[in-house]
Picture 1 (cartoon, rainbow, N blue to C red):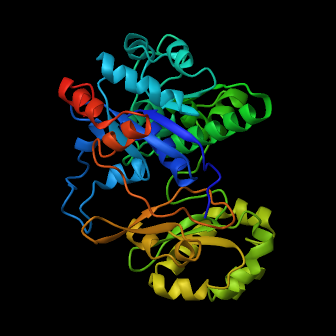
Picture 2 (spheres, helix red, strand yellow; picture 1 turned 45 degrees about the vertical axis):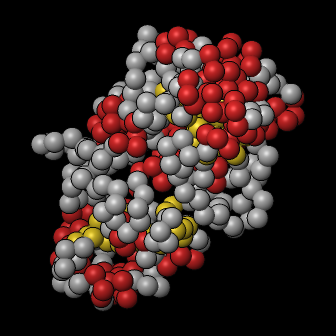
Length: 406
């Protein structure tokens, strides 16, 4: 099936995960995304090892983090410091609709790939930039991985750390990178729409700092409105609303209840859990009393949920009208019936025929998942792309021999 970005070409000069993730989303939507890598090792993300999980140890002979941020792309190896490499890059830019980069202002300027340089190669190209701290301000030229610019500087760790905790919240890999990449892809889509309507090519900017601020906008806005350091929240094990809380089952699992309208759900809920008496208990009805006597209700529900295993409660709550969910492990998410029902996992194979699944971009069109795709090997498409740019085999051989291309 044709993607909404069919016919759009993106040239990506970016590494690690944040900005490449935007390229992966655009690829999922049908764009031809060309990843430009240097000739001395390529994207350093290719050498990244997280948790000791190395390529070749899993079910597919692929780098799992590269698959997340680089699937569906083509890779070309160019040395932008050489005349030949720069000439090939300029030809590539001339064919593109979007230039996608995470290079900082200083390196962009020194390498001759800043706005004026790119626009000289292609005046109609959209320039999309991802950064740690944004394109302006005193720290525009400082690097930023998501653990620093998003989770730390953006207030996320502070907001997600319970008061009095010994250690602050610690993120997993690409925690801010992937939503940031999705946002940047959306910005590119908006810029393409604008160019289609007006002919004007925009510059698109997303930073990890801005993404963090948007992610915890309620906390930051509360700080502005009420001069508080954080939104007042009850300590772990308590809640303002007893049916907007987590409860631990006998086998050590957790269930999250989110009944934002207690009066609407309380009677049916108490019937299901085997405590119909609570539906008429004046301590808990109406909702104002439930909130006022939250500690008593939480104690009752805590003891009740702890009396049975998770399997019991999932059956009991199966037809519950209020919103609830089990705190699932990543392995459980892989087997979630809703994940399967919506084709959120894409099945693919490596070159040896080993099957694996990966997550497609969260936006679907016409309820259709993207086609399977894998991340390119380093410089895998160099020769093919040079041929598409009009090079002949003798010219390609000369460029390789000079070190201008991989």
